[in-house]
Length: 286
Ligand code: PAF
Picture 1 (tube, rainbow, N blue to C red):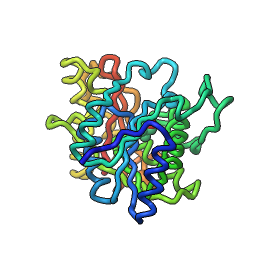
Picture 2: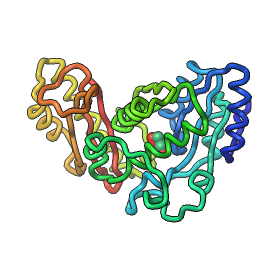
Picture 3: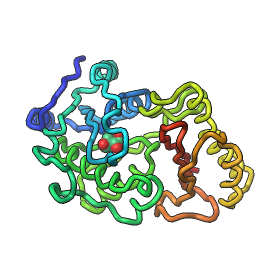
Picture 4: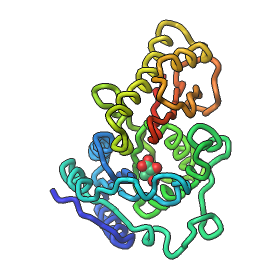
């Protein structure tokens, strides 16, 4: 099968109209490209669930802060197309920023309608260090939903806060689709897959392994009956490589996103840390 590459919103809409006319279900896998095995697992899940699968590839300028890696973010459309073709995605939608945002120069909320998720969900974890990030994510994802009108949309649990916020957007704005959370995919040594892993030197990558080790240690202590987050926090810190600069390590109820003092079922344990200059995130859900 041949995956078709679409750059124009009008071309996406034409395909969707035809698919819907045939009564087919549509799955969307939103990505920023630089596709890896983690994305592959989302596309495979979409293929299992839906008749037609569309993968969006768009490095979304409005979710990057002024000092973040928007310019440097890997853009690999040829290998992305190849992977989508191998898995059997029906279409890749890879618009330009102009196609998505028109001639707005500043791309700020003085020029553009933004989606602002609830403050208590964005002013914590990744949102604390990345002000405006989740407004940018929610805005582009709503646009992608409106363009592709999917029945199902697939998101990785690695970005657990993003997933939580997008589920909330679907609920609050009565969007007519189901979000399907998909498990984190890891390298054999435990490193969670991320397009940003390509930035890591060998030594930085080695040091970064302590992040998943710390999370695993928390899980095994919990299984032995230790639930106090202060104890678990200290243990995790003692496992993190000293060259890893921790930004946060938090324990949150994954139904409410409230902080917890004691771990129970459905607790999200999320970490963000820098190895060298590269900011990495990882988590487990108990
Ligand atoms: O998770 C990502 O890759 C991005 O945040 C997303 C959801 C594609 C929006 O740009």
